[in-house]
Length: 269
Image (tube, rainbow, N blue to C red; front, side, top):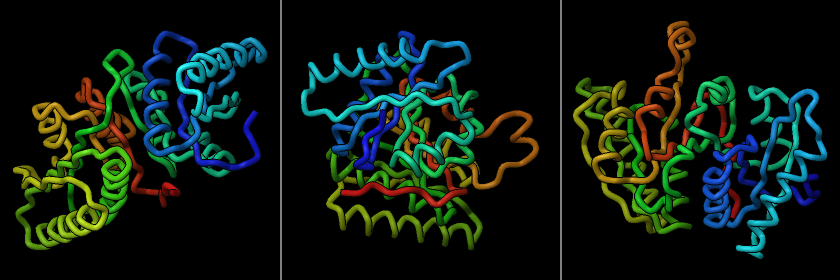
């Protein structure tokens, strides 16, 4: 059962498989960074024994609390479809980040484009990230401010270094919009005392995110903070969102995916 305090929560989508271990450890790491509650969520299937599932999740919590006594943690069983779950978790349970299995992106794709809170996609087969070195692409979109804000929070609460890769658009208007976002990044990072670097990329805003992935991998970064698709076309529905390709290429890199089509919930100090 969830408590009545409405404390902000880091959600981890569990499956009661071996993949849960690294996802839960990642969620715990995020909860400790931002001093939030960890909440393990399980989508209950028909004919599953609710009491048994809840007991297994409780065992996860007990093991965590034995190692980290100060960790606030809870479990939540739900029968809601994934597409509507982020709204419910945000509105009713104060969720601010959802940790999910990057190898199961297809399962979460519908929810990603509807979610008011970011998905943190993690490959459960790789070592636990510490989120000390973060890459963020800067393109022409005004919603880039959302990704910069999350970067500033990681920088502030985790002493993370932020590396921004600015798009290399050639057109006058696009160039101005990218420059505006670069100025915004510098002001925000300087104001919050975040360590940062900004590089001018070679590719335009359309391919900037793919260039940022390549940069992050070559620089051995641990997290890519990514803005999702602003417009979803029929082609995207047929062949998949560009962010799916990016996450599939990310390898060891965790990806914090932020939806530009919704107003995002913010971190409360």
